[in-house]
Length: 209
Ligand SMILES: C[S@@+](CC[C@H](N)C(=O)[O-])C[C@H]1O[C@@H](n2cnc3c(N)ncnc32)[C@H](O)[C@@H]1O
Image 1 (cartoon, rainbow, N blue to C red):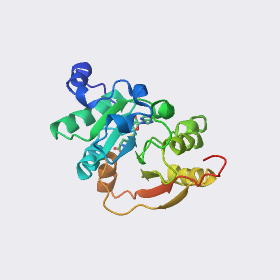
Image 2: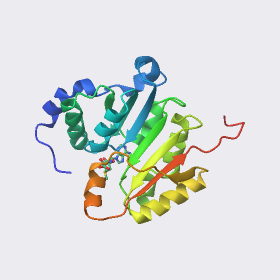
Image 3: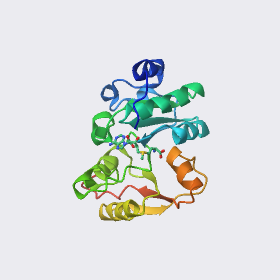
């Protein structure tokens, strides 16, 4: 992604939307934000089209957007700031370390939209639907938690369906009408078909619960 000019001052202007020390809130998110019915997470929010629209649609839910590329996240933050969305926060963070910032069951739902496909075999572990990521999601989600997953990438979709199945997640179709992401808008305009599914946390065996 092209380096954004004035990144630092732009991020500083959005500081109120950013959680600077998320590790300090592990296990305390609901205490810190008691006004919200539940907390949901978006991983890899990019420039935040979906993020802002999703938060606006459900003001009673706190949406936390994680993004590891600051040049993308600042655009999402500026969008959120311009629309004065109160129930939205951002974390400049790599989802690999998700369990450093959220305790068991703290997140009701995770959105993963158009994740990077990481095509090379040695890069598979970085896919957000890789077994190690699913394991992290199982920890931070409650037993009835869900991952809402969208992609245009056919091989990634097939691989992800196998990954979900191998880890015991049940998958069903997503209802129509979810907010569009920036990638989704572009692909839809080009007539590229999109896969949209909801994956449910595997039923835990008694000894794991
Ligand atoms: C292809 S873009 C899609 C952006 C947006 N979700 C959309 O649909 O328009 C994938 C985004 O996920 C972010 N990402 C990938 N792996 C990540 C990780 N492990 N932790 C946080 N963000 C990640 C990338 O930096 C990138 O902005």
